[in-house]
Image (cartoon, rainbow, N blue to C red; front, top):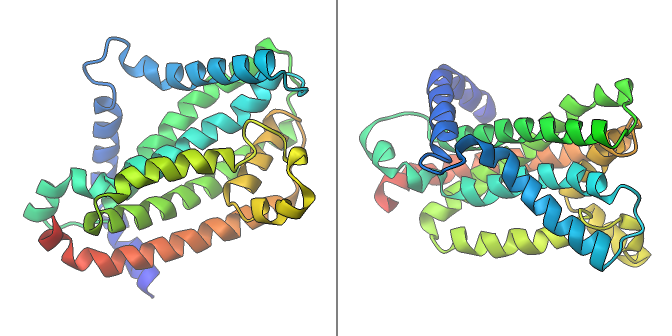
Length: 261
């Protein structure tokens, strides 16, 4: 019942969400020389650095390593920004929270949605890289792409709900999350294959909610094959669990947001 009431209330303020998403997208690179092009340049520059390190210096045996990396790096940037940036979404709008009433869930939802739109733009670059590298396009596999995107959006929203509520009470969390996401990245098979992980540690790696999501993205974009239903289902279950926990914690803690801000 709590979730249904929250969904109805947030839906009633959908226009506010759209307005905040537009504001976030327009203001993200406002005043910078390249402006909106940083949406594409940021992941591309990271891709170049990692590709040089792992293809030239460490010499990864993975064929077309740049595509192998890019297929996982872009979703990871979305996930990482949802946690770190989403954690400060309530604090960044503290004046609005103090002055007017609206469902506070609107703030992390708006931030995650704007980051999701950013990721969608980055997929234009991925498809361009696939065309240039003459990678195979599997139409049936590409039909699964919106599904895994929705699954990841659910996971990211759950994380943002949780971290944004906790950061109001514990401000240092915003900085701690930067360290956590950095470590989390290296514990996710983004720059390496899961095969190099010792068999005894793989069950732990598979508990990482980003592992099945990254695997599905690679199946679709790099291997050109339809992902396994079990992998996608596991990611969906984890995502829903995190979202439910995040929403419950947010609902409970938001009662005293105004006092803490």
